[in-house]
Amino acid sequence: MFSTGRSTLKKLSSFVLTHHLQLVYSYVNNKEVAEDLTQDIFVKCYKSLHTYKGKSNVKTWLWRIAINHCKDYIKSWYNKKVIVTEDESTYIGIQKESVEQTVIQNAEDRRLASAVMNLPIKYREVIYLFYYEELPIKDIAMVIEVKENTIKTRLKRAKELLKKGLEE
Image (cartoon, rainbow, N blue to C red):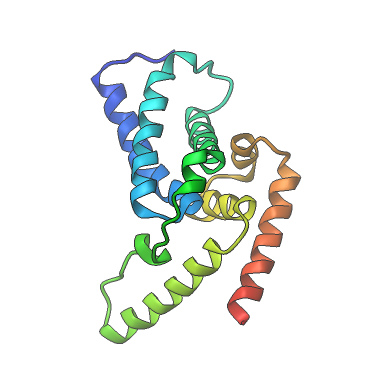
């Protein structure tokens, strides 16, 4: 289905390394581990190109590989033995505005990032895919392998939990 030439490698690396890092971080909450896992996912995607059957959008297929890899890592022995914490705001960008606005925005971003990172993973992943990657509900359902109504329910519950967490 795919060629394994340089252009494919370049497109794949660009997509995986830019889009999957934030998703992986939302699973592991650690910058270094997220970077390592993202590299692993890139290699896994590249080695699996020949297995892509075209039944879904290629991006959906790549997201599925990333999510499965993250879940495997979370279940792994290594993850249970190594516990490292990090500030949740690592990947939050800073806007070029006035100092006051930047300080206020950073505080709000940290609060929101912290609230999102405190959500259970099933809510965190749908929030990330829907709001940050702007995937439609149909694609998220394919990636996570659940029904569209389940995605809608998870989004609703995630928003309720975020609202509750941010009001405290």
